[in-house]
Length: 56
Image 1 (tube, rainbow, N blue to C red):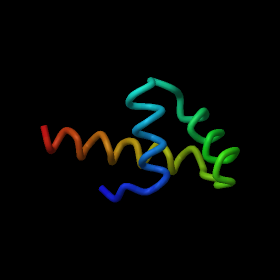
Image 2 (image 1 turned 60 degrees about the vertical axis):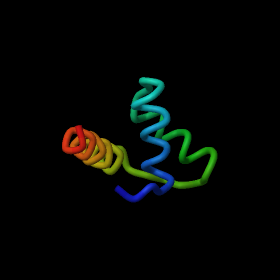
Image 3 (image 1 turned 30 degrees about the vertical axis):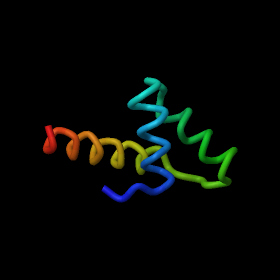
Image 4 (image 1 turned 180 degrees about the vertical axis):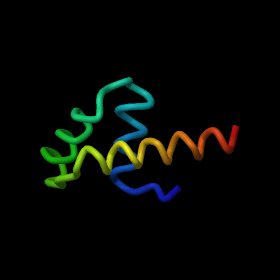
C-alpha cells in the first residue's frame, strides 16, 4: 500500500499506540490541516489490515 500521510498516521496511532480513529482525524486536522472523513479512515484501516493478513 502507498505510504502516504493518512496511511502513516493510521499505522502510527491506531496499530502501534491503539488509539481511536477520531484521534487520528484530530491529529491530521491540527497538524497538517487535512480534513478527512472518519469513514475514509475506517476504510483505509481495513485495507491496511487486509494487506497485513495477506502478507502474513
